[in-house]
Amino acid sequence: MNFTTPLFLSLKLSFITTVLLSFIGIPLAYWLAFSRVRWKFFVESIVALPLVLPPTVLGFYLLIAIGSNSIIGQWYEALCNKTLAFSFQGLVLGSFFYSLPFAIQPFQTSFAGVDKKLLEASWSLGRSRVYTFFSVILPLSRQGIITGCVLSFAHTLGEFGVVLMIGGNIPGITRVASIAIYDEVQSLNYRSANAYSAILLSFSFIILIIVYFINRKFTRTL
Amino acid sequence: MLSISIKKTWNGFRLDTAFEVPHGVITALFGPSGAGKSTILRIISGLEAADAGIITYGKDIWYDRTQRICLSPQQRSVGLVFQDFALFPHMTVKKNVAYGIKEKKRLNEINELLSLVGLSDYAHHYPAQLSGGQKQRVALIRALAMRPDLLLLDEPLSALDWETRRQLQEDLRRIVKQFQVTTLYVTHDITEVYKLADFVVIMDSGKVVKRGTPEEVFLGKRLSTRIQIVGKVVGVERNPIMVAVTVMHGDQYFKTLIDTEELDRLNLKIGDDVVIGAKSSDVILFKVLTQS
Image 1 (spheres, each protein chain N blue to C red):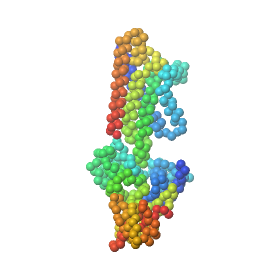
Image 2 (image 1 turned 60 degrees about the horizontal axis):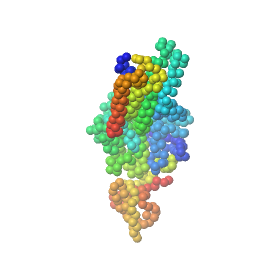
Image 3 (image 1 turned 30 degrees about the horizontal axis):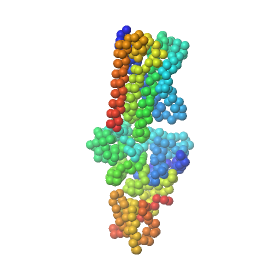
Image 4 (image 1 turned 135 degrees about the vertical axis):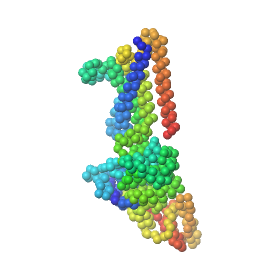
């Protein structure tokens, strides 16, 4: 098998997960930041669960939820004529839930941190809540948006347990870099395992350097 | 004319107030901190809801509890100016002013507005590059650019130093008069009421205690003096016949003499607000009455 395939799969999975998280995470984070419903804490707890849950537990329940016997699994099979579990699409779904808090929490914190007076000024100037979101809240939350995206990308890149539970280890389909390392060590291919590990290590380190650099830059300009 | 009659209770504080704001003039809403002035402004602008009551502007009903009418801030045509400016920090001065303008063809008015407050050269500056006085000028024209029916100012000058405040008071009155917009001005500074307002509504503990022109309300009579200076008593020196009273106005001091009988009649103490009036020959001192 090609050495770069698992790496490419990891990057593809991270990229798709991050894009999905931005599209769904930004409206959800907005709701969490500004809604006054009483049961908000309940949703917040669900979103934060992947932070404390063993990845195998999350993976196990997701597997049950999307397996061939589940409603979602059967629906997907009828629609796409293939199983959702042990497919790349299944991995995307698992990664989405697994990285959810890493995107939502920075988004939510930055939305809630925008001075309420600015929102009130915008409304009193006749602008709708949607217009206010795109013209005031979003530009002033750049730092949180970038942090959330970069963290969910890096977190997805490094996930192992959820991927193994939902996706298994199918070369070219679900065998991402973190699984490949485990595989190579099992087959005593330390040289190959080392190469994957070194690449993932450098990648994660560079991403964190970017996050902290951006944070420092924003803190200075504000 | 804006007409409000509202009730609201929160944290044990009871706001129960009714007054009118005449069309095209400046009305000051005056009172100590915690009198409920800012809450009234928030209720009028639609940012907060009252528990009961009616708010009308001309024939339009903005809020009526019994008819279940409560227009959103966007529907009310109210220009709001905050104490801490609330300029959008990521937008230039020009973009801030343009924010509330919805018709593209009106965007060319921005340059006129900027020159009106002497900020033509600052169109492409960001709020962080401006002084406090400049920021508040931008906030004022941003609110006026959308041509509101009503302009609400919430202690707009209290974050500024005395000299800037003095200059802005003059600008504010000039600009508001030019736009002929109905204005409600919240303040706890008597000097501002005197300098800016045509009418004043005095509030205390959530209730209106007095209303009228500043002279009627504060002095209980009309003055026919040439000059009037509002200030605070900072010194009272008693001699056998006369009393020397020192009054501070901004960063200036005035000393005037009154007789001891007058001192006792006024019950004048250090910290009282007073108006020094001068006719062509003699100087007269009046104590400001803020209580009903």
